[in-house]
Image (cartoon, rainbow, N blue to C red; front, top):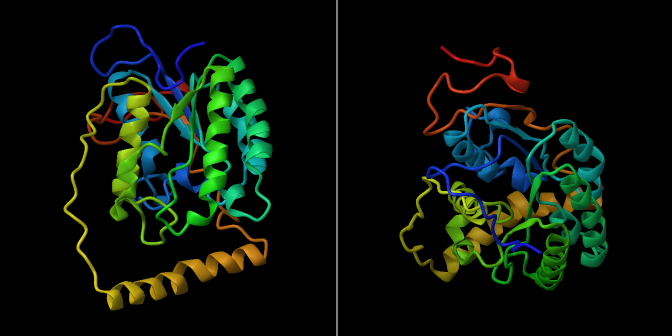
Length: 289
């Protein structure tokens, strides 16, 4: 059984890798919520876009699709994204799912892992490298109440990864995520800095050399008790209360939202020269002059 903490690749040019078509599956985390970028499809960038930008930098003809939609539960991701993903014939798939289920009453980490196991088996049968994400340590965050469920789910994911030679992107061990500035102001999603840090971790897990440099943010300025309490009240009014109301009404933040990159195409981002790559599915329509 191969080591699931990283992919062993042949000796190649620095930054080279064996993948040519990457598909990202998941929910708001993979969609990139918290990392706004008006010029990106859907208006968000996120860790998956950042990973694709790096992978596309050294692989001619590299194509990337992102099927993730905010608010999706694991079964919805399976029902709505698995078949489209398989149809795109990727050789690299990232799958982050189950977090929204664990937030809900009755979310069972054992049941979720059993369901995910069959999905990973299907993805790997086509020869794709599959990257799974365990959950971050939520002990010091507003999600601290589900820390024990996240820990159980994480161990189950390691078993799933070992069964199918998948790669674990280990967010639990990514201690940088304890920095408050890694999180968006809603305290549920990651900030641009958080997405950047996670993207670097994913590339490291794949043993791909990259240009993402670790950032060393200035120390978080201390706040008085009154300032902290005031900030908590603003956060509760703007984010937490609406989130609770959506759950009571059985609504999702992803209602009416579609995938931001449903078809694979070249990635144009920092370090990628204009005119590189082809259009979706190998056509020349997407090339630039």
